[in-house]
Image (tube, rainbow, N blue to C red; front, side):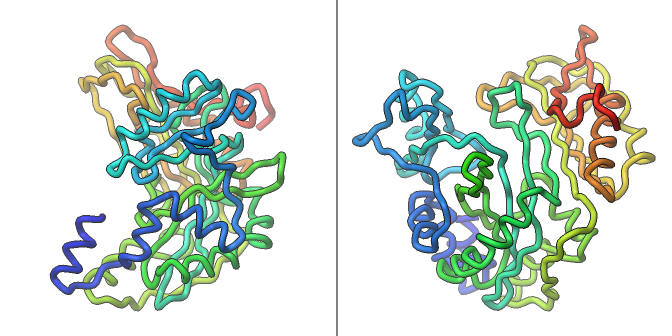
Length: 339
């Protein structure tokens, strides 16, 4: 994105993010400062000079200017801190790193579209990882979260002001945050200006008619768009993204049950990243993403039923006959609970 922005500037062409807005997307430290200015909570910060102690753990160490979860370490104990700083710095183009108190909570994402300087909230979603895994691999994301009312009351207006302040005039923006039940606060981590990596943009087009691909294409070609802004509405369908991973290096021998999904899931978007005969290499920081499954339901209870169905139906076997899928196994979808 940075290269495309620089090229557009040199050629005198429009682009869907301004250089000022990009500077806050690119630099998490500067974004933290802007959040504080607008009264948005951020995690407690440390530095290598004012470094954390054992009592401060867990802390998270990450590059200030990188993405894709590269170079990120959660230090449960302080003896891992030095190595975590080294890894983060190696993955930072500028060598700058962020050291924060690690907040245990669910990731909470908010998406906005901005047209002619006017930001409009279009989605709120909660993201889960498997409770028994120390991993940055997100498994489940869904809308209609229990934090909806809190966000709308305490944070939405402040975020709109922040977006205007940092130069978002046209385009898209989504915020990664952590919702902490202990404090009742939503902590802001970073802002991005791209289509989300979970495919939610497909679901939003289907559910509320907001075509984010059209928006960024219009702005990048003509500097304007005729896209209609739809104010955020509570209620509505639950939009769900289910990511299925594998952490085992192997050769895939068989993929089963995928064909059955279309008959049981509404508004299905299935992205297959694997095939029979494919060799999966070991991934140190992240696993191998096998499937991204987008679908919608009328209620959260129906979503849980569909997740259980996927877990029972789909399997990926290696050459030894072992099912290598890492399924989401949070307590709310365990089969011993009533449907």
